[in-house]
Length: 212
Image (tube, rainbow, N blue to C red; front, top):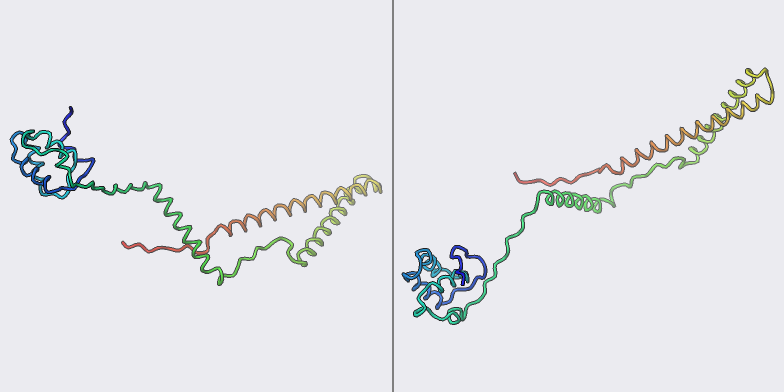
């Protein structure tokens, strides 16, 4: 049978009873035990708890004729449960928790000031009648200008041919409409990007003072 390692005091922990204390006091002077076990027995005799492995190692090495029975030695003793050591959080987890805390603080602040902070109004293109009318006139003027330029160009190129001049005017009108459509798409995409960047920029970031 393998002997327990006297240096290993981990494992099951028991509360020390008077029979245990008396046995340990006697075992501290038992020459059958090694010097190490006698020192452990002397130290444990003044403690309120004892490791089962150490107590059994001392009991196993003591005189079988004088030592108490193992069941009688454990009679009246209770198990002592110790709380496990809390796990240390990794740096990555700490950073993630810090970010979540900051997000929660921002949401909490937004809830507190939502009744007193004016809502941001999103400017939509052509949201007013004036904008719609202005855009329509601008498109009409551009198309008319394109028609005149195309008509005059084809008239000069094809010796004042009415049919070709009209075709040139229509071509100029279509090109002007395409240019206006392209400019409108570019302007709308830029407005969307500006609005998105504004919505992602926090207006207030709560700061927490740390004690140095």
